[in-house]
Image 1 (cartoon, rainbow, N blue to C red):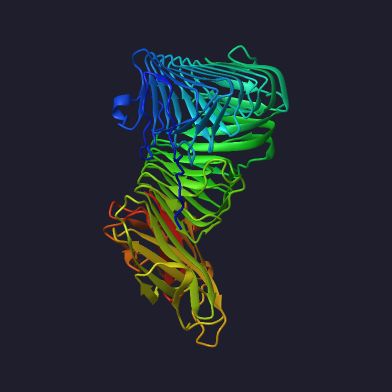
Image 2: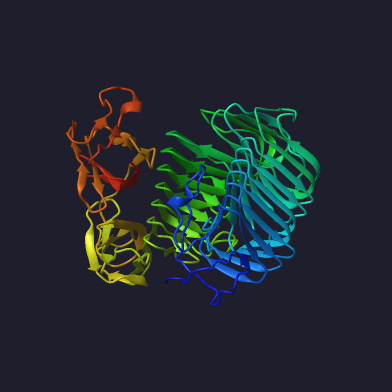
Amino acid sequence: MKHLFYLFFSIILLVSAVPCRQLSYRSSYLLPEIEQHISIEDIMTTADLLIGPSAETLLVTSNETQIGNLFVIGDGVVIVDGAEYSLHGSLWQEGNGTVIIRNGAYLHVMQEYLSQYPHFMHDNSLFHAEDAIIYANSVYRTFLYDSSTYIARRTDFPFWNFRECFDMSTLILEDANMVGDLLIRDSCTVSMTRCDTILPWFCATDGVVMDIEFPDYNFIEHFEFNSFLTGVSGVKYSAVFDSCNILTSGVDVFPGCDVTVRNSIFDLAVRIPDSDTLHLSNISNQTYYPYLSIPFSDRIVRLVNTYLQLWCVYTFDNAVLYMDSCYWGESHAKDNSTIIADACSTNGFPSSVTSTEDGRFEFKNGKVLAFVSSWNNATTYLENVWITPCRPGIAQITNIAHQSSKMLCSNCEFDTLPYAMDTALVMFAAIDTIEGFHIIGDAWLDVGPFSDIEFSYYSLYWSEMCSIDWHLISDSTEQIFNDTLGTCEWTIHDEDFLVRLVIFTTEGESLSAIDTFFYSGTDIPIERQCTYSLEISPNPFNSSCMITVDVGSIHESPLQVEIYDLRGNVVMPYSDGKPSSFVPLIKGNRGDASASTQGIYIWAPDESISSGIYLVRATTEDERTVTTRVVYVR
């Protein structure tokens, strides 16, 4: 079901300005999330409102609405005085551009998901709020660059904010509530007085050393974080907190840092750039660690007698991260990077599972207590995941894919079904239950209004547990929403068996869902028994994996190992010690007495093998077989 996302005011009131500007409607437009300067000319549309660069003032004294971005540049000035200004777009300031919100004024940024309409400040720009309210109906992000200054005194922030201070920017907040996240890095200056609900992230970049004990988070009488703090060196920024309530300190760790946190309650953010491959396991929020050294090769991070309240992880630039049995707050896969998480859970932090900018996030066999999302040509793949937000509305109002991204959902359970915007795609395949001979589930997709992709068809199969012979139950060009996918009269009883659903788009993309069921009937039982094991490590993998077949007392029996795709096509045959010529599957030396080489195979797919789920089947001479799944991520 699609959701109505944009609610616009029906009346645009007059603006008292010198000179007067006509506010106009426009379509939704998302400014890019940036960490460097972007030319306004490259992103501005005719519907946006530009104040400047010459001396020009927009004075708002009665309630107004702007549908589109607001650019305040050069000597331009915007003053909202005692009125409500509703902005359906981003606020961009640069080149001394000034925005003043005062005398009970109300700045309302109408956005529906995290970072839809950010606030950018560049080049000595100034934002000054006093005796005001600043509200965005989702997390509001502000980026301060290039000696810009942000000041808010006696200002109410009803919703969570995220401010990022770079370069030589300055942030001053006095008597402000709900400050939210605060990223502090470079040579910025931060001052907080009589503020509450603050989550500062002190960046530890290359060369930074921290050996620190953070103060109690309930009330901070006075705390300064800079290079003069005992145990801290290499930081260029300065942050001062006076008479502040509920301040939970966090450290944002980059390659090349050396961080030790002792006797504290704190948060941890991890940045994984470049082409690193990293494995993290059993790291959890809300956990006391007498001693924990996180296994990084490019930095040192230790916790000593410390309570890790929240940890987050972000990947960039082709990095690959595997997480197993972890419990985290937020994680992003960005810039062609990949995150693969298995048996994990999240605690409901706003962007718990997000892929963006060509990234890929695979989350399997876990629980997400927040909405999930995919942006900017990225892919979020969910398998056997329960998505149930514990803080609805804190970042966005639904599970969302947009900007040509994909959200692929296999056997997932959502409190709120995912939704596609603009040119995005959502695919949903689920096998829920079997009622008699009827298989109940879902086979559908949702596309954005500007996409030409359509649902093509689905196919439903069943297979014996120890076989890769799939038997077609039904196929259909009709989408199914929690209804009968097909009907089958089983030829097995008192055995586990597999059911596989595959859905296809008109562009040839496919998504599979596989589940295991037990059927007790009166028909022919399966006679073949699987009496040995087959293990694959790592699984998922992105270059090669080791296939280990434990044949026990029958280890002298010849083995045949084959790899199939989910359609039953053989992609890798191996028989009688003769490997395939097009994909190297290397058998361990079975003549060696060492048990470590018996029944060991290495699969290193070549360029002809695409990412996906594959079935590995091992068969002995006496026709005993075992089959397991492996996930290949290129």
